[in-house]
Image (cartoon, rainbow, N blue to C red; front, top):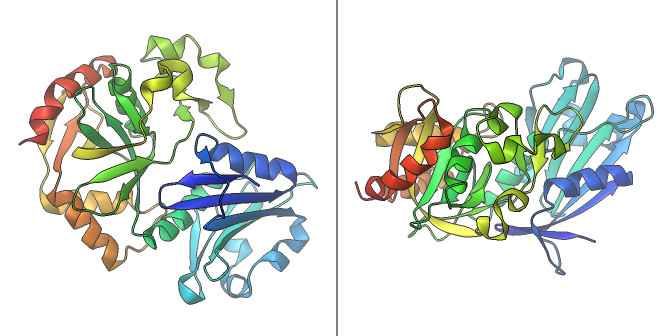
Length: 332
């Protein structure tokens, strides 16, 4: 049994059919494997459509209306602090939920025409993983993180397809070291702002690859996945074995604004920084944030410098600008 080391917990995966397990393991394939007892087990099952609701927990069945379920994930609250995420894509329902007493996440997918269809695993699992990590005082953020050659830790926040990966790569290709592509984790204690990443393959869209010759030249060789417009590649295969670092102290947080005006950084007020970090900590619409997370975010803001980052129109030049300016930004 594979046990993947994530910041704050060790996760094992069991899936039926085997292709389901392989898909889930693919999401965490760059995480270290450990021969230890897992903190949480992810149990995934694909079942015939008529049996789908039979496999769900009773409290989910009481709340879930399959007919109204759509492509936007829905969150359901259960007993003992448990929660479920449900979604329906092209007629196929998926549901994942936590069972904290059993230390498990259950994920059920319906078969389509008797066959397994690739599941939207990240959009279903990340809201649940956020809750489990928070129980260990780890704070999951939808953001890319990198360390400059001058050892300044940077965190980039933006909505999906808002420029996080492109901006992180602009620093990486100038000698920086990647912490995370889009899943960064603030780690206790919060007297210094340490961040780790959940290592994943780089998620590269064609438009991003076109900015950087080393990506564009090999883009067609990157891995394709069903139902994805992106392609996937290990950062080490492009930028070398030393391009990834396990953790860093974050000094600056940049909220990305794609703009022809720039690059330049504009200071963000504490209130605006808090509002944007709360959004980055929510992985589906209206996911609540608990008071403990607000306390952690307040400590993070008090010990970092926060800026709006106007990217300018040339991503290939942005990395050098960030390396040249981030040390000064960190001391502002």
